Every structure is written in structure tokens, then in C-alpha cells.
View 1 (spheres, rainbow, N blue to C red):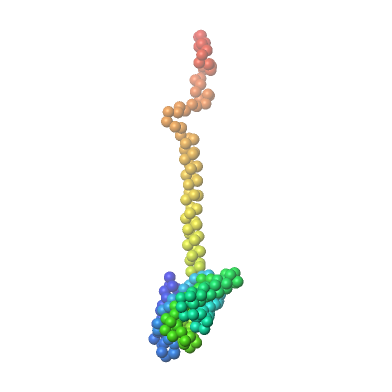
View 2: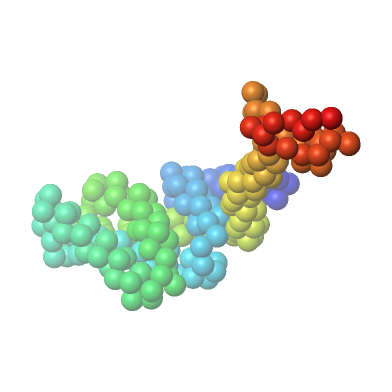
Length: 228
């Protein structure tokens, strides 16, 4: 728990510093610091693949979305059809990269990178599509800095999260199998008690040697008693 608190504090401090020092650093991070920090933090927390593979997949998705905006600015019409084609191209690129690498660059991380670029740049692009080259570079730099800060703050927690989830799954499996192992001895005990204790109304008949009175020979019920 201490590591979670420490990572959260580091993420909060870094994101706040990005907002405060936005003008001093020449970065327009005031409006996208929270978006970048949150996406970068999620990228670092998910224990799927190595941190380098997750970061690489994020960059691939980010560049794919950037290229999509370039297609909209240079080739595609500024209409619903053009935006739809750009979205389709970006998603197909993310899917193709995940399939080509057989999951080594996870699909969810590429989608996260595409979402980072789209979330940070869509409003700026819609305001002035002709300024794509200059505005996209500034926005891309700002969102990458914010996402990088979030990723660095939480990436060290990935192995711990994976261990905790494995412990939770092991405890759940143990809880599912424990009742079955406890029922078996109870059934055996109940069966033993049923054998030792007969049902009501069932006479207990001992052995022939126990029921025979001394000095009297055994006889059948239908045979006459021997005369004295």
C-alpha cells in the first residue's frame, strides 16, 4: 500500500509541475497534463508485457493517430466521410501491429497511444486544420511529456500489481476447492455412523453363540422340545 501511495504522490506532483511550469518550459501542457498523466499512469500500471514493449506500443498508436490527422489535412475531405476514413485507418494500423508482433506490442497499449493523440489534438485541429504541421508538433510534444511523467511514476508498480493479482487468484482457487475437500470426510463419518447405529425398529441380533443359553442344545422352532 505504501508503494501505491508513493506512486500516486509522485504522479500528482509531476502533473502539477507540468501545469505550473508550462510557460517556463515552452510547453502547452495546462489543458492536457491530466489527460497525459492519467494515460501514462495507466500504461505503467498494467502488468502486461515489459515496460519497453508497452511504451513501444503506445508510441506506435500515437504515431498512427498523428498520421491520421496528416491524412485528414492533406488528402481526405474535411467532412464526416474523411474523419471516418481516418479513424478506420488508425484502428487498422493498431490492429495490424498487434497481430504482426503476436501480442508482443499489445493492442490495448497502441489504442491508448492513439487515444492520447486524438484527445489532446482534436480540438486544436478542428480550430485550424491548415496549421497542422506546427500545431500538431507542439501538441504531440506536450502530451508525450505528460504521458511520460505518468508512465515513469507508476511503471515500477507493475510487477507488484501482478504479484498481488496472482495471490488473489490463488486465494480464490483455494476457496473454491476447500469446501469440496471438507465435505468428503463428513460424508464418510455419516456413513460410518449409519452402519454402527441401525434404524429405529430394526432389532439387533447378536451372534448365535451369544444368544444360546448354557446347557441347552440348540433346536429348531418347529421341533418338539426334548423330554426330561
